[in-house]
Amino acid sequence: QEVATRDAEKTEDKILYKRLAKHNYKEARGEGAAYAKLTSAAYHKCTHILCSGFEDGAFFLHEMPDFNLIHSLSISDQSIISIEFNKPGDWIALGCAGLGQLLVWEWQSESYVLKQQGHFNNMSCLAYSPDGQYIATGGDDGKVKVWNTSSGLCFVTFNEHLGGISGVAFSQSGQVVVTASLDGTVRAFDLNRYRNFRTFTSPRPVQFSSLALDSSGEIVCAGGLDVFEIFVWSMKTGRLLEVLAGHEGPISSLAFSTGHAILASTSWDKTVKLWDIFESKGSRETILLGSDVLGLAYRPDGAEVAVSTLNGHISFWDVHSAVQTGSIEGRPDLGYSRKELDKITAKKSAGGKAFTSLCYTADGQCILAAGRSKNVCIYSVADQILIRKFEISCNLSFDGMEEYLDRRKMTEWGSLALVDEAAEDGKTSIALPGVKKGDMSSRHWKPEVLVSCVRFSPT
Ligand SMILES: *[C@@H]1O[C@H](CO)[C@@H](O)[C@H](O)[C@H]1NC(C)=O
Ligand SMILES: *[C@@H]1O[C@H](CO)[C@@H](O)[C@H](O)[C@H]1NC(C)=O
Ligand SMILES: *[C@@H]1O[C@H](CO)[C@@H](O)[C@H](O)[C@H]1NC(C)=O
Image 1 (cartoon, protein in one colour):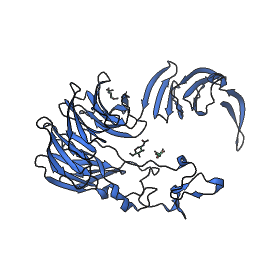
Image 2 (cartoon, rainbow, N blue to C red):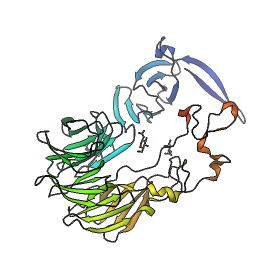
Image 3 (spheres, rainbow, N blue to C red):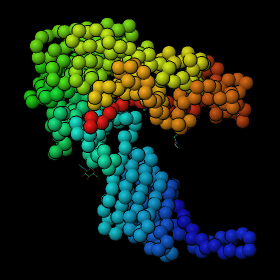
Image 4 (cartoon, rainbow, N blue to C red):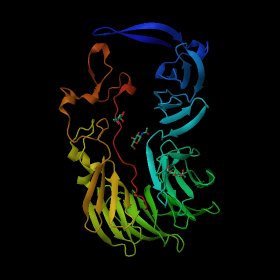
C-alpha cells in the first residue's frame, strides 16, 4: 500500500533511480480498512494527478508530489485491473475484468461519461430488431442487453430474470423484446419505457429452452427443456391460451412463419412438428428425421424450412407438402478439432459436431450456420454448396482449436493437460483414472470455442 516517487538520474550507460518520498494509503483508505492489494495505477504528467485502483474496487485520486487526497471512490467490489487518463487529464477510464466493466469518469464534475458492461458469462442468444438498428442479447448470467448497432454501445440492461436466458425475440414493431429463461418465466420488455411489462409463466415450473413470437406480436410461444410441451400465451392479456403436447423429447427450437402463423417446433425426439395455432388443436404435420433436431429457420417467405440435425446435416423442407427439397452434409465444413483431453483423433470426435443455429439471408438465397465449432459457414441453398467459411477466433488458448495433438504438450505419460500441476515435493504426479487426490479445483481448464447463435441483419 505504498507508492514511491522516483527520479531518474541518467549516468553514462545506466539509469539510477532514487526514492524521493514514501507515502501510505492508510490515510486515504481509513485506519481500520481491510488490507487490499494495489492493482493498477496511472499518472498524468501535466496535472500531476495520480490515480490508483485496488482489488476491492476502490480508487483514489492524489495530487503529486505531496500526495494530497482529492477523491476516494468505489465502483464495485471487484478488482480494478486497468486505469488510463485521456490526454488533457480530465477523464479517467477504469477497467474491471471480473465484471467486464468499463467506466469513464470525469473527475472534476464527479460524473460518469460512459458506463459499459458486457455479459458476465456466455452470451447464449441474440436477435436483431426489424430495422437492424438494435441487437438484443441474452446471457447465462440472466441479463438481457440491448445494443445500438451503429455505436456498438449497450443502452439498456434488464436484470429481472433469475436464470440463464435461452431465447430472445423482437416484436415486428421493434418496441418490445421478449425473452425466455431457464428460470421458468418468459418476459416482455418495453423499449420505450424500459420496463418489464408482462411476465408469462406455466402452471408448474418449466425450464424454457426456446421462444417464438408471431408476426402480429400477439402470440408468444415457449418450449420446455424438462417438460416436452409448448406453451402459448396471449401478449395482450398475459394469459396461457394453450399447451401443445406431442413431442417426446426436449424442444430445441421454435419458429413462426411470417403471414400464416404456422409454428414449427423441433425436438431431440427426431421430429419437426408444424402447428396451426389459430385453426386446430394438435399438430398439422410431423416431419420425421433420422437424427435429433437441433435448430430450425424459416425462409423469409415462409414456404421452406431449414433444419439442422445432430448428424451434421442441414435439410430443407417444403412447409406445405412436407417434402424434402434438399440436404447439405456440413460436417467437413465444421472442421476437425481435437480437444486437449480427447483420447480420440479429430476425425472421430467430429462425430459430435453439428450446427445448432441457422439463419437465412433476407432474400432466402443463402443460409448461415454455426455450432459447436470455430467455423461459421454460409451455404447457397439452391446449389447446396459452401460459399464462405469464417473462423470466429484464432486464439489458441481456447480448447477445440487444433486438429492434431501438439507434440510439445506430450510427455511420456500422456498429454500435459492430464498432469496435475501442483505436484508434491517437486515431483510430477500423474492422475490415474479414479484417483481423487490433491486439489481438484487446480485442474487445468480451457474454455471451448463454440458459436451459440448466428443472425443476419434483416436489412
Ligand atoms: C459456457 O458455455 C459452455 C458450453 O455450453 C459451458 O461448458 C461453460 O461452462 C459455460 N461457461 C459458463 C461460465 O457458464
Ligand atoms: C445509436 O448510435 C447512433 C450513432 O452513435 C446515434 O446517432 C443514435 O442516436 C443511437 N441510438 C440510440 C437509440 O441510442
Ligand atoms: C485467448 O483466450 C484466453 C482464454 O479465454 C483469454 O484469457 C485470452 O485473453 C485470449 N487472448 C486474446 C488475445 O484474446
